[in-house]
Amino acid sequence: VQLQASGGGLVQAGGSLKLSCAASGSIRSIDDMGWYRQAPGKQRELVAAITRGGSTNYADSVKGRFTISRDNSKNTVFLQMNSLKPEDTAVYYCNAKVLGYNPNSKYDNWGQGTLVTVSS
Image 1 (cartoon, helix red, strand yellow):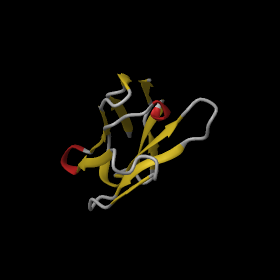
Image 2: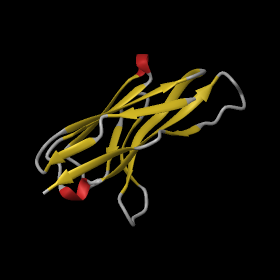
Image 3: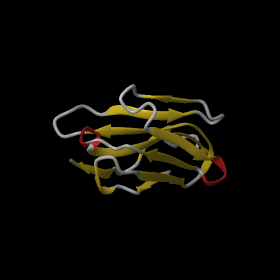
């Protein structure tokens, strides 16, 4: 299973970006999907997560500004980020809990990370 993230970039404070992450490979189904971020010198933290049924949860720091969604038919998760702040600057990683057809396949999968830089 591979996760391919895209959509990062440089944006001014108050701007918007939309991240996408597509899972590919021998996938039977995907449970939870989510976005994490890691700023320089800090630990990786959960930004937002979404269940297969669409239930969501968000870090307090992004509530009301970020929206997570998914397209189960395309094994893709999105993160719409509005009203971006300089403190949102980080590498963003997507995560997917994947049930593969291969019983030895990994359940917890990570994308390669995409850099989001918010300038003040």
